[in-house]
Image (cartoon, rainbow, N blue to C red; front, side):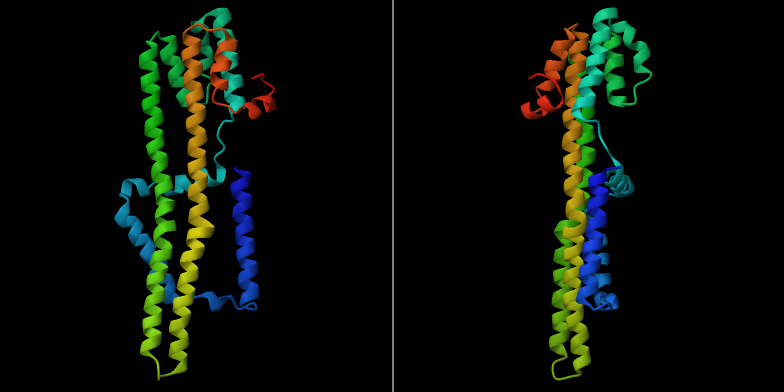
Amino acid sequence: MDKGSVVGSLLMTIVCFVVFWKATHGNLMALWSEKGAIMVVGGTIAVILMAMPMDKLKNVPGWIKTFLFHKGQSPATVIKQMNDLAEKARREGILSLEADVAKLKDPFLMSGLKMAIDGVASDSIESTLRLEVLAMQERHKAGKKFFDLIKVYGPGIALTATLIGQIGMFSALGGAIEVMGQMLAVAVVATMYGTVMANCIAGPMGDRLALRSGEEILTREMVIQGILSIQAGDNPRVTTDRMLAFVPTVMRSKLGIAA
């Protein structure tokens, strides 16, 4: 579970509920507008369907799960794991890692080590693993794009609903004050729907996925360098130093590893 994402989501929900409750004096139904909800929610869904293919949208539950529960490997974990493998390969030879490969939980590391053990050329290993990283990056971009569409078009559609509500209000001038009030409510509430959807939900979720993607790309690059170093028969210290090149100097001291 990603504690930051879960705690942040709960805090945002509580903050919004408290403000809504106090602003409406406990009458939360004052925030409801059927016309506004249809326009903003329905319009945003329509935009997403227009902008993204269905095969991408099937991954929405996975993106939400990643936001709430994904916890990637830390640089410290990757460095320690690769250092242990490097030391064993140095002592017993790279073929001794065959037993360790079956125990690995990371398919990316498993694939790279298998190729190294099988004697595949380092250039081929590197190009294959980088293709995997590129494919992963494209998948992650789709998740970020989904939430960006909501963040960008949600407020715009809400503004459309606001303008429609104002047109209805102006057309009712001189008529019943109740009709004018209803149209004004549609205009204001629709804007609120779009703003909340973009700034309290989609925006933070998209940014978190982008951050996670960057972290995963970094750790995979560290794995690539570690595998290539192990295959080359480098000293374990050299293997560690190659991976530490991706870690800020301040973090190295926190990891207990000399820069």
